Image (cartoon, rainbow, N blue to C red; front, side):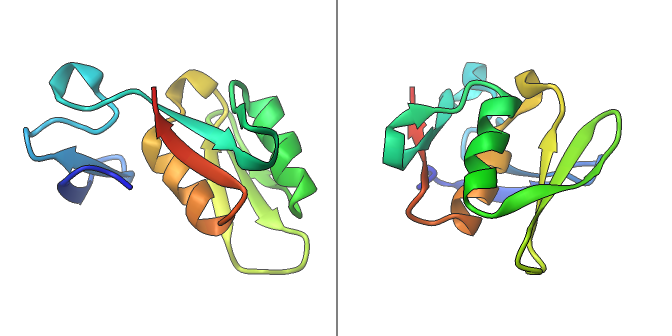
Length: 113
């Protein structure tokens, strides 16, 4: 999956992969690479929150909670898993992508651009 590094919690409570070079995996200027989340059945890169929500909805996810910054999704079947996404898709990072992949195996993949 990801290149070597260490997962750390930032001050805002978000977990992030720090590369061996000391930079964030989401910071391409410090050894990280740009990543994309791909919906495998259609080979479609996720380019907006609306498209991603539609694909997740087809897999049983629905909105659970939202505020000005985040949207949370949970499974309709009553599972305990939650996915938290930034409302501003420009803030969508590899940590969000890998969370989606782990909770939706065989449907999504993170790829290097």
